[in-house]
Length: 382
Image (cartoon, rainbow, N blue to C red; front, side):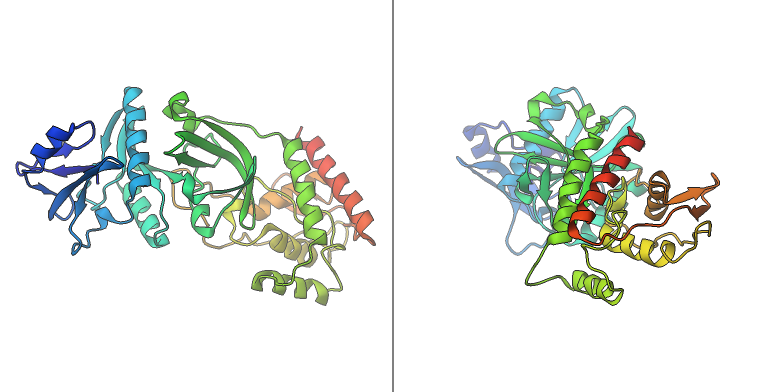
């Protein structure tokens, strides 16, 4: 921790202290704001000066901190200060026994900014977030760059843990990942995320921290629909042609289900495995639930027959937020199928089958159909 209490109960920060000042401070006693136990000063040429608990202490306020983490939150603290934003470093909130890395006030709102660099239990992340929300504090989670594996310029590989930190910071902006690298001082914003299993495609904006303002985190950024569809077309090709020695249990079950229907990824309709704005909210891969929905609930219907569906009910795979969109991804899919002329509606979200879906007879036909569907999506959106 970067801040502790002296014997008079005053918070003392170690940053910007000279070696002589640090030596004088070592003669005093300091205490953790949370557990009130004694802490000691740790400093050196390659270490951000900080307070540390003694080894026997199990206080949660010192959990998971390292040099990378300390440098990151110190950078972010100075960044906010330079913008004239009222910010507190490691402010302890007794009501919920939590100490966000940074607590700040901006445009009438209070924000708890957390710089997350280590894997910790998901329930701790959720409980911290819910604690802030109960007090009317909006949490902002920033991932350490050490958690991210970049695959290409616009694509990252994420574990289930990192996927939790997709967040919507206001009602009129898209969900985004926030990423910071304290060694390069580069801040990255990944917006308009389209997850594919453990990969995420989106619009990537990277700048030096000093070139960004806090308000930038709330900006709306549009992604090129054509660029997304071009990328997705390549993913559909991989999906149709992939051959692996080992499949996940989920994929094995899915492929077995297709085979029982006399189908293969190469022979399913092109209206399956399509990107939706909010499909990241579902824990089930998009190609699985879209296959089940189209093949079981739409394909068997006669032309003109009504489509019956129940909204997907499952735990969302993101942390809570004031602005978590409660979208029905099945309804979003139905609206897309309407644009693709497979369905029609009466304007009251009652849908009826309009046209049959096509089952390709060859890989070449499947690829051509995929191209037509992607082009149709671009034209209906644009």
